[in-house]
Amino acid sequence: MSSIQIGTIISSNRKGKGVTQEELANHLGVSKPAVSKWESGQSYPDILLLPVLASYFNITVDKLIGYEPQMTKQDIRKLYHRLADDFVKGPFDKVYAECEEYLRKYFSCWLLQEQMGLLLLNHSNLAGSEKRAIEIIERTLEIFRRVEKSSEDVNLAKQAVQLQAFCYISLQQPISAIDILEDLYEPFMQTEALLVKAYQMKGDTAKAIEYLQGYTYVNLITMLGAAPDFFTMYADQPDKMDRFYHLFLKLCEMFEMEQLQPAVLLHIYFTAAQVYTTQGKKGVAIDALEHLMELINKLEQGKFYLHGNNIFDELDKYFANIDVETESPRNAEIIWKDLKKAVLHNPAFVVLETEERYLRIKKKLEAGL
Image 1 (cartoon, rainbow, N blue to C red):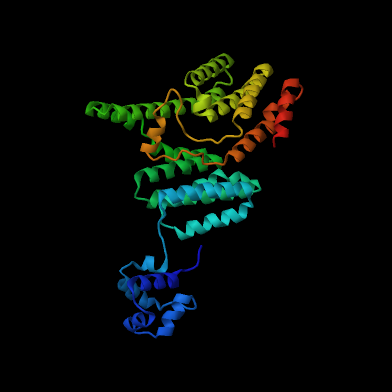
Image 2: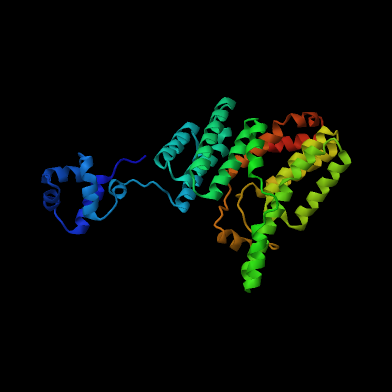
């Protein structure tokens, strides 16, 4: 946290008002040397003088002492991504301490609180040990609870509840997650679909198309995001699981997901490889891992961010219109390292160690870490 800047602020406002140190001193009933010491940072005004000084300069006491209880959304985004990069470079505890400083300084800036909690949650795996990672997740749970209970922003409070559920799942506490999510569940609420109709009726076709593409994209990502769960749920029904795998891959191909949202494909290939391995289908499992490797090689130098493609050509306007964060909440370098480690250290793939194709994949992944 930066030091108090009241001396600089007094000096700046005094000069801006066109008065001397002696004139200011006479107004306050103090000596000229006292004002001089304030401005040079050698001492601070008495607390009872703060409202008098603030009134004299026609500013708030917060502004007089340089205290900013809130941060703008833009500044929060910049801070988030700067700290995310710092977590990659390390050391973890130093960056964590800086996060805690911001949490203390902006204790009632709920967007900042929520974003700092999300930042810590997304980087808890870098904490150095499983015990430390659990402590970080428990800390984020505490942050999200505060946001939920204190924020007057309904959407932010709702997100805080969802993030609490994610924390509970990460902590292997599914009952706690179910308890809070079932109260939050709102089936078939499609605000964007209604906006499409409303804008179309108004005659604003361009805006209607933006929302049409936007909510179609969201529904598509939601559906494809469920693919890994379909695979694991139907692991004991090989024919049905295989059918879902090819169905989801077909959808990815139709909507050009490799360009639109490649992370979806990465999860599909990875989970499919796990399930096929448990089913004893080594060849198909390695096929999925080879597709995964091809995608990693294509995308490793790029960043994950939300954007449109040839099909969703108005999507970027939609993201700008709803002011959504388009950059990934995690540093791309961490994402790639975690994905490679997930393949290399996955106990499900131990049975593939006798397969030449898998050994080639493993060698490439080890070389990339």
